[in-house]
Image 1 (cartoon, rainbow, N blue to C red):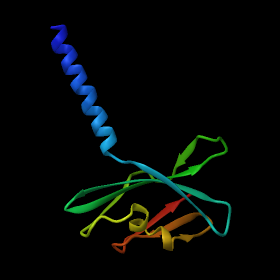
Image 2 (cartoon, one colour; image 1 turned 45 degrees about the horizontal axis):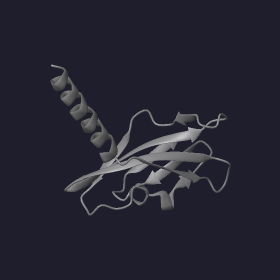
Image 3 (cartoon, one colour; image 1 turned 180 degrees about the horizontal axis):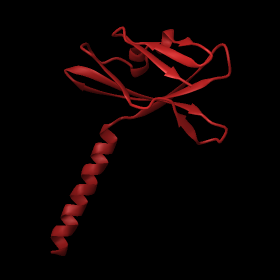
Amino acid sequence: MVFVVSVVGVVGIIGLWLAYFSLHISVDSIESPIEHRTVVIEHRNDSWGETYYHYNFYQPTLFPIVLKKLNSEKVSFWVHEDQMDDLKALGVEEVEWTGESVTFRTVTGEIIKVDF
């Protein structure tokens, strides 16, 4: 019985470990050129014929490791092309900053507005 429980436990831990490392979550930040604002972008993608891109947006707070989440739900979209860089797919190169928000235009033409 101890052997069976141990084997099941080890297999479960290995499965969780593989699932965690297969997500490939990355974090990058971009800064506003007009004011002192920074947006931290958590991003990853899944490719199953089409590529699905997933994003969460955060803003740094006064406390060093603490981030404020800016979007209530994960932002996702898919592209029916070869896999490209997550930030390029989001449209970080052509981002529009305003006093209270940042707007991204994705490669699919979607507009994603993130309010501060």
